[in-house]
Image (tube, rainbow, N blue to C red; front, side):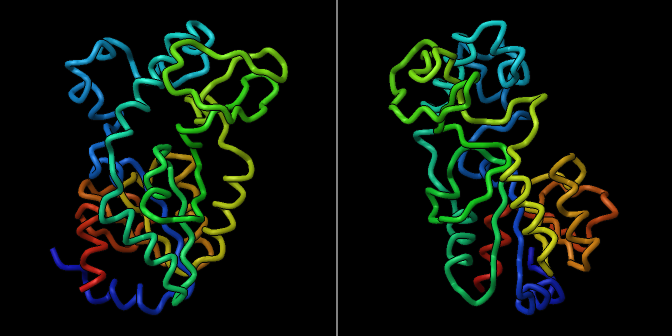
Length: 244
């Protein structure tokens, strides 16, 4: 599917571009989404667990070791995943210096950084980092092979993955940076994510309110009134089309 000439012209004219990426971008690297989780894990002992329960503060408080072990399993699965063409193309775009390109992601897998992006606003945290549930201190030691929850050396609390769980607020600094990037852009690209799920959907609305054009790149288009243009292809095809 070719990209509309009108959209290509908008991209070329834009001075300040903000890109919001979601699970669809990582799915091209083989990372399971919550929607595909059951199928992806059917051969795993974790298939009987609800990922929304495991990725919640309630799940952690109920059984910290089980949730920790689930995240250790997820990390082991992610080690084999590599950045795809979309990750690499976004990184190259950021480095080109021809336009200001801000990157916001809802993904926690670190594949944007692995693909070369140095400046990433992580709305939902990063699965490779850990911090204390009680005192919030970052835990910088390796957790490879650690099967049970670690005690915080600062306060004795429990170490948890530095990801945003269901029911938790987004990190203030990340949200502030995301709002700033959305407020100041003239082109907003929503890539591999629904434009209807809040709070992230509010970023596209914020960009639109300031006169930005909003383009959705998603093989399953939404019907959001925020969207100016919809391109129903996967992210790697879209960014590959930009290079031609």
